[in-house]
Length: 324
Image 1 (cartoon, rainbow, N blue to C red):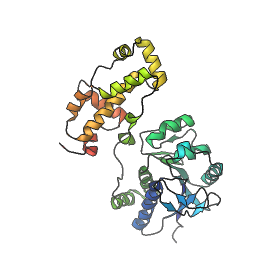
Image 2 (cartoon, rainbow, N blue to C red):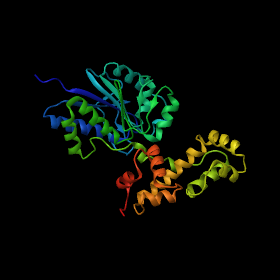
Image 3 (cartoon, rainbow, N blue to C red):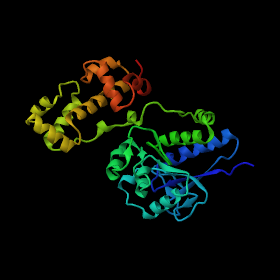
Image 4 (tube, rainbow, N blue to C red):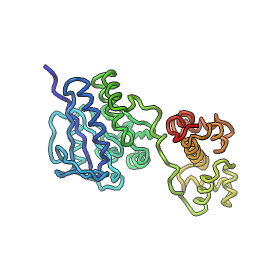
């Protein structure tokens, strides 16, 4: 006698990112086909008994709402929405997530869904990930969380979390492997043309260098100058002289108003400049290193591994628009 299917509920908040729901659902559906039986039963849950309007403008009618109880729940996943960072706390949804997580074998979130799920308190003290753009916000709102901003998928006990958008499929493939083994998980990934294990981390897709300058006017001008001239000398002494401060006072004020040390800012902007040059595909990592203020390619490589999680050569291979 075959075991009953595992019920997977995906909570879709208002303005949900559609791929956060559809991507994992397709992975579980393909796993059913590969296994030759109904291993998974996926149901969607809305925060109200109405059609859900996705961020793309599409609408769909969820199977249940947070006014309903779901029996025999195996896995609960909370999808993300671009509006969650600014959304008011939905206490009904929070209570529903907390109650149903206690019944589930595993639970977690996809993308910015971590911002909503963390309100339950069930992530406290856990290792988690989320979309790189809201990782710092999640850590700020919930200091007890151990936010791994670069990871695509993080598993900590019953908690399973995924990074931005398409990483929900990475998480679903990992859960399929956990339930059905490596061979079926690899077959699912091959059929859907997704990575079985995606290389690198999500920071290779981030764009922190596009953020607006912070702090007082003189510091904002300095930040713009560093971005425009990454190859120049940007030591603390030289930057302090540019804004007319002592080096010690400048370093203290910069960190307080910008949120990072001058050295960290310079490295971040040089890496962003290097990323753009590598994406163009016309120049070698050695030439890119020179144009971005590094004495040699090894310096660029070390900074790239810290900030992006892959080497410059690997990044160029994956993201270049034009190959040399």
